[in-house]
Amino acid sequence: RGPHELAGVNVVVSAGPTYEDIDPVRFLGNRSSGRMGFAVAEAAAEQGANVTLVAGPVHLSTPRGVRRIDVRSAREMHAAVLSAAAQADIYIAAAAVGDFRPSEIAAHKIKKQGDGGLSLVLTQNPDILADIAGLARRPFLVGFAAETENLEAYARAKLERKRLDLVAANRVGNGLGFETDENAITLISADGAEQLPTAPKCELARDLVGRIAARYRAKRDA
Ligand code: PMT
Image 1 (cartoon, helix red, strand yellow):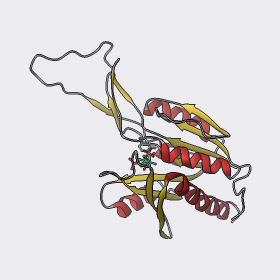
Image 2 (tube, helix red, strand yellow):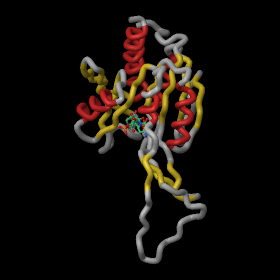
Image 3 (cartoon, rainbow, N blue to C red):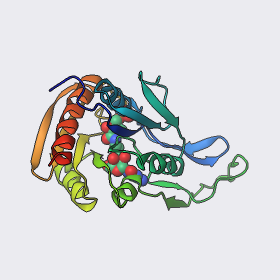
Image 4 (cartoon, protein in one colour):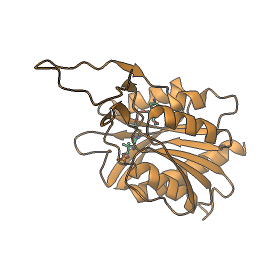
């Protein structure tokens, strides 16, 4: 593989969690640190791509040569990704997008309800990847799948349902996937599954981006 396999290619990457506000001091979030998506953005930039990184709330510095757009909620991420996707050749969805948000954001801090509990009513968020997959001019699409069980079967179902080009499936929970330095990915495509060796996220991202680039170019030049 050459050093600049993605020269001139527009790549959009999403990374990190989303935060869904409950009131002015509380939110619903998840354990994503953003490290996997930031490493993917960095690896794509190293390969010469024009990279736009749409980042949820994370504590990470922007990789060299990458254009970064910060967002907080799933709906903000949806708007930023959709607008960047109009120019994208490849979209890599590494963000852990919250599937639900509180139906209403309280204007003031919610107080204790005597001795009683509190029920939150949630509304489903838009599916960013599904909406990109529905565009008339679709970029090459790489989804992630984070599962605690039946990894390959669930990942393959995602690939087929949204007609994705690739799904990077990682097992999460019990110290795997989220927050950690290392990760392991099974790369699923219509023609099979490849196991990428467990490695620090920076190394794994270079391996993953190399494989994405090869498949993107094969499809483009077909
Ligand atoms: O950030 P780190 O701490 O480094 O951890 C990395 C990671 C585990 C978060 C990452 O490797 C990963 O797996 N990201 C995807 C997590 C996830 O939300 O998976 P999912 O199976 O719920 O979603 C499937 C795909 O649909 C993902 O590409 C997701 O970005 C996308 N999605 C999901 C929901 C939604 N509303 N919109 C989406 O686009």
